[in-house]
Length: 319
Ligand code: FAD
Image 1 (cartoon, rainbow, N blue to C red):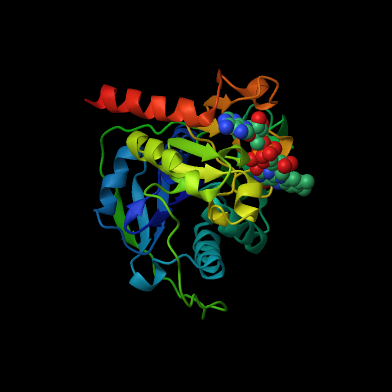
Image 2: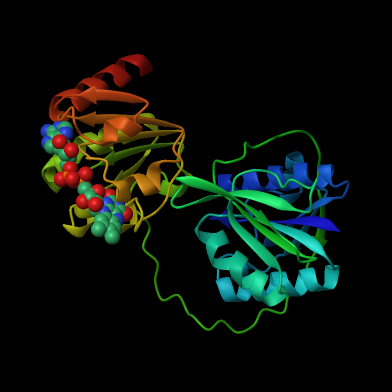
């Protein structure tokens, strides 16, 4: 039984969440005394053999450029066919947008037990039990996977990337891709320089910013910190910001190392998407704002005074 990790990539680069999945899969494989191997559909701008430094011994690559754009149905068919031929396996995905689209489809095709939102390595002392978050991160559940092949989707930022030495062997994967049922007609790039789901730092604004014309300070602070920008739902609903920046229960769930919430009240539906952030900084002029209860650092003050001061301070620090 091998551990296979889905290598998720975009524009030639492996996503950080996928590097975490590779590190997780490699540690799991060494726990189980087996090998960790990657599955790569499409091509990278760097040599895939270099992924060996994350602990995998082989990369099974279907190197058709047509596979560079993720098509969940095509990907699921190729991966499920490959794993069926390989025999009982453990498959690891990141529980990011790609993993959420592909992992359940693969699990259904393989009739395999699936756990999404995993946050720890499986406990194999009593079967195969994986800890996951439930109720928007408010509680945990331990899920027992009892099928011969198991599928795990690991929450982004739940497991640290472990980098060592080593080169992986590239093994061609002959994929018979089914005709896609969905054709992408056009794609619009998300705003901002850093993709929200990949960002280590996120600067987010709420209705307290008063209007779209005031987002300059959010963007300036984000650019200085190398951060992505996000917003609360009413802000996206009012078209102050695009919907792909909306975080929360009905938006994107993120888990950056630092989340800076500016003029956001901290409603439970907002917190549901950001409460896995490692450090939360809240700037709000109302000392009673609920967000302060979830904050690691809180600044009671007017965003239009505090944020420009932060910008000046960061500029000074950067020299
Ligand atoms: P407000 O609640 O209006 O808060 C604005 C905050 O800004 C206040 O705390 C105020 O004190 C502060 N403020 C005002 N002026 C300043 C200033 N000058 N400087 C500093 N602070 C200032 N919301 C989400 O965000 N994401 C979701 O996914 C989501 N899903 C939902 C799903 C459902 C089913 C429902 C019912 C609601 C959902 N909501 C979601 C909405 C959520 O309940 C809140 O209404 C929303 O998060 C509030 O947005 P806000 O904090 O930007 O605005």
